[in-house]
Length: 586
Image (cartoon, rainbow, N blue to C red; front, side):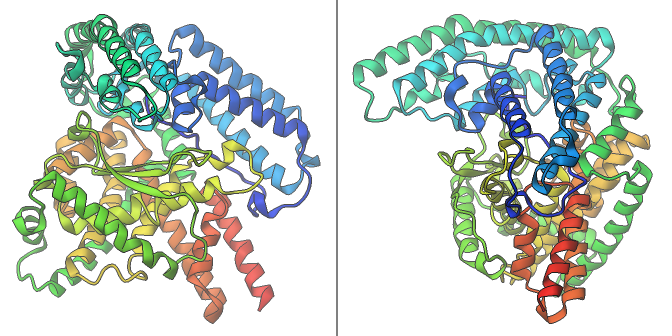
């Protein structure tokens, strides 16, 4: 909740991207878009910070029950305002934006009944990781540091509000699985320090720009130490007492989302929301089993190419354990990631005509969250271009971070995966901000998985171990279809899901456990990756088949990205129109 959560978007109408339209915009519609964007920034100061808007950098989201109800009422009011506009009178571009905006609001209102706010802490985020937002703050002026101090002073109130929400969850029986929550006490303990200078919240005060004088630095540091000692640490001690002593013992033993109040409806909603399809859990499970079998056959071929004589399971063990596949230190691993990014960059012109202007960098995942989070993730750049995108890599235990996974991982999280997807979205001219920053999981993560496979056209998979790494990563996403539906809809245990994952992919034990726990904690989200990739690959095959020698992979990839983040149905309509336009031009 203390990370940027970009809303997904769906349209079922126009197939051309908004920037391709030339008709006038409806002023009432676009005023509503602007007003709601502003409301979103004001009500979620963290989201404003992640978007590079510094106006609310001195505060946190209001998590009081009254504020939550007010935000829900505002969503319903916004939908009424939208429906007061006659959609039939709008241009095709405005209809696209209208439908996207409507879908967002309708889904936000639909999910209100599941009271997700009653689970405000997860093993991957919450107030115990609130310091992480400092990663995207500028800290260029005295005011930037003063805003951070004000945020620290406000943190006790926020934590008190979070405790109230936890208590509401206990009353309603809306509780997370204990196996996940057992990770949280150590995270809270990391914020309880005797020396304020050792606090993660003090990190910004260890380095200043030259423009800030020594006297100002000293005062800021003294104020930070005082506030951390008198306000921040006591607030975390209070949270620690409640969470460890009262909340954790009441969390549930089960892992399935269907065990929550109205749980079956909740999981069905999440599956539809994330995949943007009407596929049932049974259908998704069956697709996963089929894909696992197909990819295993491909793995057998690459294993033979590598000259390995044993079974596939023995090859997995070899890849997980042989020291030659691992860097010895975190610094070596970070250097290797950065070198790989430099290797990828010049090859992008082989598969794209349009390269986004926004740059990206490679950073380590912060130490305090690295043990409990994924192998890597991408943080989008600021919406105004003042901050680049960042590819965050996990350096915790380099002995479990194999080199053969680095190529597909980097293609997915950095370029041409998420960085291209987010940066190209920001460059859509004349589109409202909610469209330029939209993140629809089936599209975004489907694109990321598809981008891993572009490494073949880019000449990056010349080593059989790297090729096997690509298959491992594709298998990883196919396995998700099986284990996510298995745990949440078919009664699978956590242990069964871990065993199935381990039997079918060479990911290391550390990653496998973290991944399974992620699927338990965020039901349905992991379903979107493979479903999205399969649709993008299917549309590429269709375009190649229908266009024949006129098919240009670079143009196809540009066409997929030019819509911004859209649902799979809208993407398919757009690509069909793109194919038709190419045929007409022949």
